[in-house]
Amino acid sequence: MNLLCLFFVIDNSLTKRRILAFKKNVDKLTIVSYYRVVDVEYENHYSLGKSQQKHYIRRFIKLIFDIPRLSRILSNNPDINIVYAWNFDIALLFRLATFFSKRRYKFIYDVGDIKSILLSNSFTGKILRIFEQFILNNTDYLCVTSEDFITNYFDKYYNFEAKTHVLENKVSPLIDRELINNELNNKVDGNKWKIGLTGLFRCNISLQLLSELATRLPENIEIILAGRPEKHVKEIFDRLTSLENTTYVGKYKYPDDLPNIYSKINIIWSADFSELPLNSKWLLPNRIYEAGLFSVPQLCFWDNEAISKYIKALNIGWVLEEANIKYLEKFFLSLTVEQYLQIKSNYSGLPSDQFSGDEQVKLLLDDVKSELH
Image 1 (cartoon, rainbow, N blue to C red):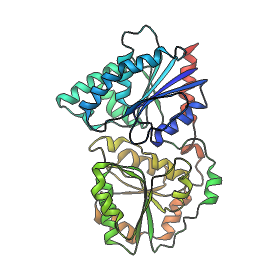
Image 2: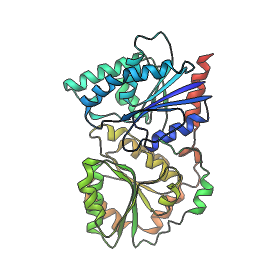
Image 3: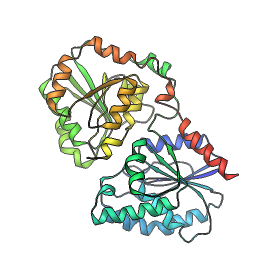
Image 4: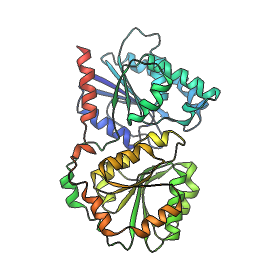
Protein backbone atom coordinates (compact mmCIF):
# COMPACT_ATOMS: atom_id res chain seq x y z
CA MET A 1 0.00 0.00 0.00
CA ASN A 2 1.60 3.24 -1.20
CA LEU A 3 0.16 6.37 0.41
CA LEU A 4 0.49 10.00 -0.66
CA CYS A 5 -0.15 12.48 2.19
CA LEU A 6 -1.08 16.05 1.27
CA PHE A 7 -0.75 18.61 4.07
CA PHE A 8 -1.62 22.30 3.93
CA VAL A 9 0.73 22.85 6.91
CA ILE A 10 3.73 20.56 7.50
CA ASP A 11 5.09 22.33 10.59
CA ASN A 12 2.53 21.49 13.26
CA SER A 13 1.85 18.69 15.72
CA LEU A 14 -1.22 17.26 13.95
CA THR A 15 0.80 16.72 10.79
CA LYS A 16 3.58 15.00 12.72
CA ARG A 17 1.05 12.75 14.48
CA ARG A 18 -0.49 11.69 11.20
CA ILE A 19 2.89 11.03 9.57
CA LEU A 20 4.13 8.91 12.50
CA ALA A 21 0.90 6.91 12.55
CA PHE A 22 0.74 6.41 8.76
CA LYS A 23 4.38 5.27 8.50
CA LYS A 24 3.63 2.24 10.67
CA ASN A 25 0.84 1.02 8.41
CA VAL A 26 1.94 1.55 4.79
CA ASP A 27 4.64 0.19 2.50
CA LYS A 28 5.70 3.61 1.23
CA LEU A 29 4.79 7.13 2.36
CA THR A 30 5.14 10.15 0.06
CA ILE A 31 4.45 13.66 1.38
CA VAL A 32 3.45 16.87 -0.43
CA SER A 33 2.93 19.98 1.65
CA TYR A 34 2.97 23.70 2.25
CA TYR A 35 4.43 25.14 5.45
CA ARG A 36 3.44 27.94 7.81
CA VAL A 37 6.77 29.05 9.35
CA VAL A 38 9.41 26.30 9.00
CA ASP A 39 9.64 23.89 6.06
CA VAL A 40 10.14 20.65 8.02
CA GLU A 41 11.76 17.96 5.87
CA TYR A 42 10.72 14.31 5.70
CA GLU A 43 11.76 11.38 3.55
CA ASN A 44 10.02 11.40 0.14
CA HIS A 45 8.82 14.95 0.78
CA TYR A 46 7.91 17.56 -1.85
CA SER A 47 7.41 21.15 -0.65
CA LEU A 48 5.00 23.55 -2.38
CA GLY A 49 6.31 26.55 -0.45
CA LYS A 50 4.82 28.81 2.20
CA SER A 51 1.07 28.73 2.81
CA GLN A 52 -1.11 31.83 2.83
CA GLN A 53 -2.92 32.21 6.15
CA LYS A 54 -6.43 33.75 6.17
CA HIS A 55 -6.07 35.34 2.68
CA TYR A 56 -8.45 33.05 0.78
CA ILE A 57 -8.15 34.80 -2.60
CA ARG A 58 -4.33 34.60 -2.53
CA ARG A 59 -4.52 31.01 -1.36
CA PHE A 60 -6.79 30.10 -4.25
CA ILE A 61 -4.52 31.80 -6.80
CA LYS A 62 -1.46 29.97 -5.46
CA LEU A 63 -3.41 26.73 -5.50
CA ILE A 64 -4.24 27.15 -9.20
CA PHE A 65 -0.57 27.72 -10.05
CA ASP A 66 0.42 24.61 -8.06
CA ILE A 67 -1.84 22.26 -10.05
CA PRO A 68 0.90 21.45 -12.65
CA ARG A 69 3.44 20.81 -9.87
CA LEU A 70 1.21 18.29 -8.13
CA SER A 71 0.33 16.66 -11.46
CA ARG A 72 4.03 16.12 -12.16
CA ILE A 73 4.60 14.61 -8.71
CA LEU A 74 1.74 12.17 -9.28
CA SER A 75 3.07 11.27 -12.73
CA ASN A 76 6.52 10.60 -11.30
CA ASN A 77 5.11 8.31 -8.60
CA PRO A 78 2.94 5.77 -10.45
CA ASP A 79 2.94 3.34 -7.52
CA ILE A 80 0.75 5.61 -5.35
CA ASN A 81 -2.71 4.09 -4.94
CA ILE A 82 -4.08 5.94 -1.87
CA VAL A 83 -4.19 9.72 -1.34
CA TYR A 84 -4.84 11.39 1.99
CA ALA A 85 -5.49 15.16 2.13
CA TRP A 86 -5.65 17.24 5.29
CA ASN A 87 -7.48 20.54 4.85
CA PHE A 88 -9.99 21.86 2.34
CA ASP A 89 -7.42 23.77 0.24
CA ILE A 90 -5.07 20.93 -0.50
CA ALA A 91 -7.92 18.47 -1.02
CA LEU A 92 -9.26 20.84 -3.68
CA LEU A 93 -5.78 21.07 -5.20
CA PHE A 94 -5.64 17.29 -5.54
CA ARG A 95 -9.10 17.02 -7.11
CA LEU A 96 -8.29 19.76 -9.63
CA ALA A 97 -4.90 18.22 -10.44
CA THR A 98 -6.55 14.85 -11.20
CA PHE A 99 -9.74 16.13 -12.84
CA PHE A 100 -8.76 14.89 -16.33
CA SER A 101 -6.61 11.98 -15.17
CA LYS A 102 -7.59 8.39 -15.91
CA ARG A 103 -5.75 7.16 -12.83
CA ARG A 104 -7.93 6.27 -9.88
CA TYR A 105 -6.97 6.55 -6.23
CA LYS A 106 -8.67 5.75 -2.96
CA PHE A 107 -9.13 9.26 -1.61
CA ILE A 108 -9.24 10.21 2.11
CA TYR A 109 -10.37 13.72 3.05
CA ASP A 110 -9.47 14.71 6.64
CA VAL A 111 -11.08 17.78 8.25
CA GLY A 112 -9.65 19.11 11.52
CA ASP A 113 -11.65 22.36 11.71
CA ILE A 114 -14.66 23.95 10.05
CA LYS A 115 -13.62 27.48 9.13
CA SER A 116 -16.22 30.19 9.72
CA ILE A 117 -16.18 31.22 6.05
CA LEU A 118 -17.51 27.75 5.13
CA LEU A 119 -20.49 28.33 7.43
CA SER A 120 -21.22 31.76 6.00
CA ASN A 121 -24.15 32.59 3.72
CA SER A 122 -21.99 35.14 1.96
CA PHE A 123 -21.16 34.77 -1.73
CA THR A 124 -17.67 33.52 -0.84
CA GLY A 125 -19.05 30.99 1.63
CA LYS A 126 -21.50 29.59 -0.92
CA ILE A 127 -18.80 29.29 -3.58
CA LEU A 128 -16.46 27.51 -1.18
CA ARG A 129 -19.21 25.03 -0.27
CA ILE A 130 -19.71 24.29 -3.98
CA PHE A 131 -16.00 23.45 -4.16
CA GLU A 132 -16.25 21.29 -1.04
CA GLN A 133 -19.19 19.41 -2.53
CA PHE A 134 -16.95 18.82 -5.58
CA ILE A 135 -14.32 17.35 -3.23
CA LEU A 136 -16.87 15.15 -1.48
CA ASN A 137 -18.26 13.85 -4.78
CA ASN A 138 -14.92 12.13 -5.27
CA THR A 139 -14.13 11.21 -1.66
CA ASP A 140 -14.04 7.59 -0.50
CA TYR A 141 -13.35 8.27 3.18
CA LEU A 142 -14.29 11.40 5.13
CA CYS A 143 -12.33 11.77 8.38
CA VAL A 144 -13.04 14.29 11.15
CA THR A 145 -11.47 15.00 14.54
CA SER A 146 -14.90 15.30 16.19
CA GLU A 147 -18.14 13.43 15.49
CA ASP A 148 -19.98 16.75 15.87
CA PHE A 149 -18.48 17.91 12.55
CA ILE A 150 -20.43 15.17 10.76
CA THR A 151 -23.78 15.73 12.46
CA ASN A 152 -23.68 19.54 12.56
CA TYR A 153 -21.90 20.38 9.32
CA PHE A 154 -21.43 17.69 6.67
CA ASP A 155 -24.85 16.08 7.10
CA LYS A 156 -26.46 19.52 7.06
CA TYR A 157 -24.75 21.08 4.04
CA TYR A 158 -23.78 18.22 1.72
CA ASN A 159 -24.79 15.06 -0.03
CA PHE A 160 -22.01 12.49 0.11
CA GLU A 161 -21.51 8.74 0.05
CA ALA A 162 -18.06 8.59 1.62
CA LYS A 163 -17.48 6.32 4.59
CA THR A 164 -16.83 8.34 7.76
CA HIS A 165 -14.07 7.81 10.30
CA VAL A 166 -13.20 9.75 13.44
CA LEU A 167 -9.47 10.46 13.78
CA GLU A 168 -9.23 12.33 17.05
CA ASN A 169 -6.30 14.58 17.96
CA LYS A 170 -4.82 11.92 20.23
CA VAL A 171 -1.15 11.83 21.14
CA SER A 172 0.89 9.72 18.76
CA PRO A 173 2.96 7.54 18.78
CA LEU A 174 1.67 5.38 21.60
CA ILE A 175 3.14 6.28 25.00
CA ASP A 176 2.83 4.16 28.14
CA ARG A 177 0.86 6.32 30.57
CA GLU A 178 2.19 4.47 33.62
CA LEU A 179 5.76 5.35 32.71
CA ILE A 180 4.79 8.97 32.09
CA ASN A 181 2.87 9.39 35.32
CA ASN A 182 5.85 8.17 37.36
CA GLU A 183 7.87 11.09 36.01
CA LEU A 184 5.33 13.80 36.77
CA ASN A 185 5.75 16.14 39.69
CA ASN A 186 2.75 18.46 39.40
CA LYS A 187 2.07 18.55 43.14
CA VAL A 188 -0.44 21.00 44.54
CA ASP A 189 -0.78 22.82 47.84
CA GLY A 190 -3.83 24.95 47.02
CA ASN A 191 -1.93 28.21 47.41
CA LYS A 192 -1.18 28.79 43.74
CA TRP A 193 -2.88 27.01 40.84
CA LYS A 194 -0.76 26.56 37.73
CA ILE A 195 -2.99 26.88 34.66
CA GLY A 196 -1.55 25.72 31.34
CA LEU A 197 -2.32 26.63 27.74
CA THR A 198 -0.42 24.76 25.04
CA GLY A 199 -0.19 24.54 21.25
CA LEU A 200 -0.93 27.20 18.67
CA PHE A 201 -2.37 30.28 20.39
CA ARG A 202 -5.17 31.63 18.21
CA CYS A 203 -7.96 32.43 20.70
CA ASN A 204 -8.09 36.06 21.85
CA ILE A 205 -10.88 35.35 24.33
CA SER A 206 -8.89 32.63 26.11
CA LEU A 207 -5.78 34.80 26.37
CA GLN A 208 -7.85 37.77 27.57
CA LEU A 209 -9.56 35.74 30.30
CA LEU A 210 -6.26 34.25 31.47
CA SER A 211 -4.74 37.74 31.54
CA GLU A 212 -7.60 39.09 33.64
CA LEU A 213 -7.46 36.11 35.99
CA ALA A 214 -3.69 36.40 36.48
CA THR A 215 -4.03 40.13 37.11
CA ARG A 216 -6.85 39.79 39.66
CA LEU A 217 -5.36 36.82 41.54
CA PRO A 218 -1.58 37.26 41.38
CA GLU A 219 -1.05 35.32 44.63
CA ASN A 220 -3.33 32.42 43.64
CA ILE A 221 -2.68 31.92 39.92
CA GLU A 222 0.30 31.19 37.69
CA ILE A 223 -0.17 30.93 33.92
CA ILE A 224 2.11 28.58 31.95
CA LEU A 225 2.19 28.96 28.17
CA ALA A 226 3.89 26.56 25.76
CA GLY A 227 3.56 27.06 22.03
CA ARG A 228 3.41 29.86 19.50
CA PRO A 229 0.97 32.77 19.02
CA GLU A 230 -0.67 33.62 15.69
CA LYS A 231 -0.30 37.22 14.52
CA HIS A 232 -3.84 38.30 15.37
CA VAL A 233 -3.40 37.49 19.10
CA LYS A 234 0.04 39.09 19.46
CA GLU A 235 -1.17 42.14 21.42
CA ILE A 236 -3.01 40.23 24.15
CA PHE A 237 -0.32 37.51 24.17
CA ASP A 238 2.40 40.12 24.86
CA ARG A 239 0.26 41.62 27.64
CA LEU A 240 -0.19 38.21 29.26
CA THR A 241 3.47 37.20 29.04
CA SER A 242 4.52 40.53 30.58
CA LEU A 243 2.85 39.59 33.88
CA GLU A 244 5.11 38.37 36.68
CA ASN A 245 2.94 35.32 37.33
CA THR A 246 3.06 34.14 33.69
CA THR A 247 5.74 31.72 32.47
CA TYR A 248 6.26 31.39 28.73
CA VAL A 249 8.04 28.13 27.89
CA GLY A 250 8.22 28.99 24.19
CA LYS A 251 7.91 26.68 21.22
CA TYR A 252 8.38 23.01 21.97
CA LYS A 253 9.22 19.79 20.19
CA TYR A 254 6.31 17.38 19.81
CA PRO A 255 6.01 14.82 21.39
CA ASP A 256 9.42 14.86 23.11
CA ASP A 257 8.81 17.92 25.30
CA LEU A 258 5.28 17.04 26.43
CA PRO A 259 6.27 15.26 29.70
CA ASN A 260 8.31 18.23 30.88
CA ILE A 261 5.59 20.76 29.97
CA TYR A 262 2.69 18.90 31.56
CA SER A 263 4.69 18.17 34.72
CA LYS A 264 4.55 21.93 35.39
CA ILE A 265 0.75 22.24 34.96
CA ASN A 266 -2.02 21.63 37.53
CA ILE A 267 -4.99 22.43 35.28
CA ILE A 268 -5.12 22.67 31.49
CA TRP A 269 -7.20 25.36 29.81
CA SER A 270 -9.20 23.21 27.38
CA ALA A 271 -11.54 25.98 26.23
CA ASP A 272 -11.41 27.44 22.72
CA PHE A 273 -13.34 30.35 21.21
CA SER A 274 -11.19 30.97 18.13
CA GLU A 275 -13.88 30.03 15.61
CA LEU A 276 -17.17 31.35 16.96
CA PRO A 277 -20.01 30.68 16.92
CA LEU A 278 -20.06 27.06 15.72
CA ASN A 279 -16.68 25.42 15.12
CA SER A 280 -15.59 26.18 18.69
CA LYS A 281 -18.67 24.28 19.89
CA TRP A 282 -17.79 21.18 17.87
CA LEU A 283 -14.01 20.86 18.03
CA LEU A 284 -11.90 18.63 20.30
CA PRO A 285 -8.42 20.22 20.50
CA ASN A 286 -5.05 18.47 20.90
CA ARG A 287 -4.53 19.53 24.49
CA ILE A 288 -7.53 17.64 25.91
CA TYR A 289 -5.80 14.40 24.88
CA GLU A 290 -2.33 15.55 25.91
CA ALA A 291 -3.61 16.62 29.33
CA GLY A 292 -5.54 13.37 29.58
CA LEU A 293 -2.44 11.32 28.89
CA PHE A 294 -0.60 13.11 31.69
CA SER A 295 -3.57 13.00 34.10
CA VAL A 296 -3.91 16.79 34.26
CA PRO A 297 -7.47 17.96 35.16
CA GLN A 298 -9.19 20.16 32.58
CA LEU A 299 -11.21 23.35 32.55
CA CYS A 300 -13.67 24.67 29.95
CA PHE A 301 -17.11 26.30 29.60
CA TRP A 302 -20.53 25.13 28.47
CA ASP A 303 -20.08 27.14 25.26
CA ASN A 304 -17.53 24.49 24.24
CA GLU A 305 -20.18 21.81 23.78
CA ALA A 306 -18.04 18.95 22.44
CA ILE A 307 -15.20 19.58 24.91
CA SER A 308 -17.69 19.86 27.78
CA LYS A 309 -19.34 16.55 26.88
CA TYR A 310 -15.93 14.90 26.67
CA ILE A 311 -14.77 16.18 30.07
CA LYS A 312 -18.07 15.44 31.79
CA ALA A 313 -18.37 11.93 30.34
CA LEU A 314 -14.99 10.98 31.82
CA ASN A 315 -15.31 13.24 34.90
CA ILE A 316 -11.78 14.58 34.39
CA GLY A 317 -12.33 18.29 34.90
CA TRP A 318 -14.70 21.17 35.41
CA VAL A 319 -17.15 22.95 33.10
CA LEU A 320 -18.00 26.50 34.13
CA GLU A 321 -21.32 28.10 33.28
CA GLU A 322 -20.07 31.18 31.43
CA ALA A 323 -16.77 32.31 29.94
CA ASN A 324 -16.31 35.42 32.07
CA ILE A 325 -13.93 36.54 34.78
CA LYS A 326 -16.59 36.41 37.51
CA TYR A 327 -17.06 32.64 37.21
CA LEU A 328 -13.34 32.02 36.83
CA GLU A 329 -12.41 34.04 39.91
CA LYS A 330 -15.10 32.37 42.01
CA PHE A 331 -14.02 28.91 40.88
CA PHE A 332 -10.33 29.31 41.72
CA LEU A 333 -10.97 31.03 45.06
CA SER A 334 -13.18 28.13 46.16
CA LEU A 335 -11.26 25.18 44.66
CA THR A 336 -9.73 22.94 47.34
CA VAL A 337 -6.86 20.47 47.10
CA GLU A 338 -9.26 17.65 48.02
CA GLN A 339 -11.61 18.54 45.15
CA TYR A 340 -8.67 18.76 42.77
CA LEU A 341 -7.19 15.38 43.77
CA GLN A 342 -10.61 13.71 43.47
CA ILE A 343 -10.88 14.82 39.83
CA LYS A 344 -7.27 13.86 39.16
CA SER A 345 -7.86 10.37 40.58
CA ASN A 346 -10.57 9.74 37.97
CA TYR A 347 -7.84 9.28 35.37
CA SER A 348 -6.53 6.16 37.10
CA GLY A 349 -9.12 3.80 35.65
CA LEU A 350 -8.93 5.06 32.07
CA PRO A 351 -7.03 3.09 29.40
CA SER A 352 -4.06 4.70 27.66
CA ASP A 353 -5.73 4.50 24.24
CA GLN A 354 -8.37 6.93 25.51
CA PHE A 355 -5.79 9.65 24.91
CA SER A 356 -2.92 8.06 23.02
CA GLY A 357 -2.26 5.58 20.25
CA ASP A 358 -2.57 4.95 16.55
CA GLU A 359 -5.52 2.57 16.60
CA GLN A 360 -7.93 4.91 14.79
CA VAL A 361 -5.47 5.44 11.92
CA LYS A 362 -4.86 1.70 11.72
CA LEU A 363 -8.61 1.00 11.53
CA LEU A 364 -8.96 3.55 8.72
CA LEU A 365 -6.11 2.09 6.69
CA ASP A 366 -7.31 -1.48 7.30
CA ASP A 367 -10.67 -0.39 5.88
CA VAL A 368 -8.95 1.10 2.82
CA LYS A 369 -6.78 -2.03 2.36
CA SER A 370 -9.85 -4.25 2.36
CA GLU A 371 -11.21 -2.38 -0.66
CA LEU A 372 -7.97 -2.44 -2.62
CA HIS A 373 -8.11 -6.20 -3.15
